[in-house]
Length: 229
Image 1 (cartoon, helix red, strand yellow):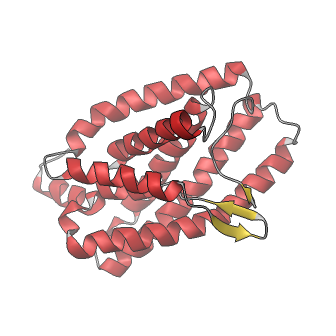
Image 2: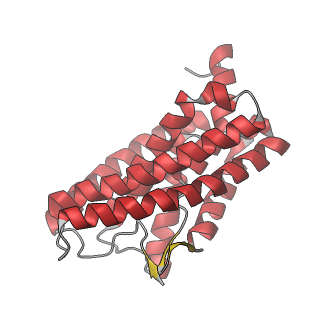
């Protein structure tokens, strides 16, 4: 079965493009590290570790989306909704670094590309959707699960779209840009549905036990109280 995932391998992009998006990833992660200090406290640091471990585990599991094609969770929206967008980006980045170093899942020269797509673009897009629909999420656990589903779907599609843009800038594959875009985006819409289901169920489960630990809900309450800007 072919795995059509977001992990770019060495040689997919030329050296200038790889260096460019490596720099983008470095700048983005620096900003995320600064912002994460405002998202984390003594209660949520352990949750961030659990989120990173969960994303790592489920990224290792592929699920079928088409005959002969499988995909896996990206985890950006899930992490952002639970622990915040900056912390979520760091969690996904840690997972990607470990996978690249220990399991050769994604090339080392493409690590910046993978972090840009999955940890930065996908996480930001998913969290933006969650914030836009936060009123729905705060009404009920079902509303939160539905918002999480949509956020995860958007996260997956935007991450794939980022890869298409990068391929247009410095792609070295034999596949045409049009063919690459159609295949990647089409399959990742389906992968996004699976990701949405996993994200909705997981966030709903956490909210049923400790709703105070769900960042997208907690941040809204703290903004009202003037705790965070």
